[in-house]
Image 1 (cartoon, rainbow, N blue to C red):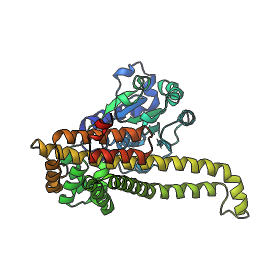
Image 2: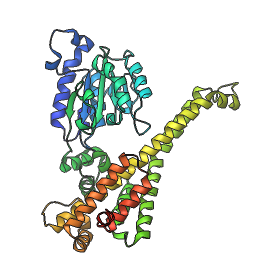
Image 3: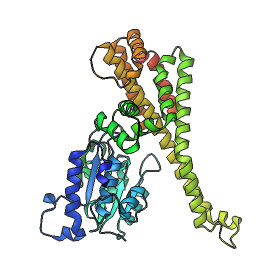
Length: 403
């Protein structure tokens, strides 16, 4: 199976990337030819955009794997396997440990980008969440992106071109992804992961085409139970105490899920760090290791704390997306839109919510969920944002009354 099969519902993007890989076969020397860079299929810097779940990071890593593969992304060789597993020496995938990339992180990236490849023609840097680069970080990166070393390829990922600064947009080639069609996501779950067709259809629909979310819902019962708990929230909001309790439960669930993701990573990173300072080596005492590693360990723990904070917020956002889909379904029932429901299995409950309010009230609730998502992105305290949301979901007029 070639690496390209990892990209679901992205035929146009795959065609562009295949052409770039074919153009790149000659290695960095191709940029020394008189052919205009604008007419080449390959370039040094790319901006990969697409809505959540479209597979931006997957597309970037797939492209990187094909560039370092001697067979243009065969999917079978060591280079392909290592690149997709994150262990290829010429492919670096960078994720922000904190809520944003700072200038020091950007400068480290610039230094690393100058390293020559060891096993292939290219040294590829995949920068996830490039929209989280601060202005200072962008300034530190600009020259390296505009005038990279011949062997360096930058792949920056962001939700849309509007999410990155114009200075980045003007120095990169745009690759736009789309939300994969739900039937194609369901088919991929069946053919690649052996999911039962009925479960695959449910997961693809519930995830609204988000491939990673669909796989989690199809294969992880805990993920399905968490989603059910989120979708029960509107039915729990009877008074202010119940609103605050629902907000606390949402935060607790997001925190628990975040720790399940980050704790194994944290433990592995700390173990690797202590071994690097001699833990387990003959003649090296634990006291000496602790003394030598203290500063590095503190820095690592600070970064891990920031990563946990970001992961909690990501999990909250996932819950808010589920709530937004539920109210979208309520509105569809209220106006008799005749469109497929995301939560078809809850049609009876959706009808109850639809009968209890008006389309205007549902729109106000959807706006409240969208504001909560923006508040989380703006670093508002999660519990405050969720409490404000649940109060508005119970009575969407409360905001107007307060104004």
